[in-house]
Image (cartoon, rainbow, N blue to C red):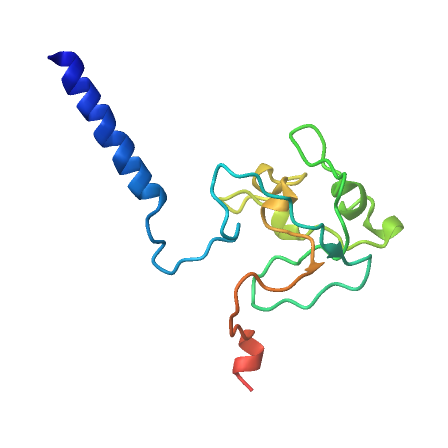
Length: 149
């Protein structure tokens, strides 16, 4: 009797899974396209990153500046930070890079430190490289300075 009940339960579970696999998406589109989750997809082409150039204009107040160059091969981990080899207060003049902001030396409580604050050490949490890309979705974003005009 238990075997029949188990077989019926398995049959019901399999039929419900088949129904879910064919369920309507409700008009939602995936960034993967019309691919099943278990189907392999090809990685998108690498974006063309800007070469070293002038800092890119920010879109809003307090926006972290974007990185105007590629960071491929940069190591930013607990033991090293490649960004600081150019952007630290000791090296920025020699490299011609923008120096790290004074805000990166403060603790949460506002106390000044002699070195980069641990909460600001991992640059890529806030700063991203600027690449030439098309937007993932259409939008009508305008910076705050454009809206005021």
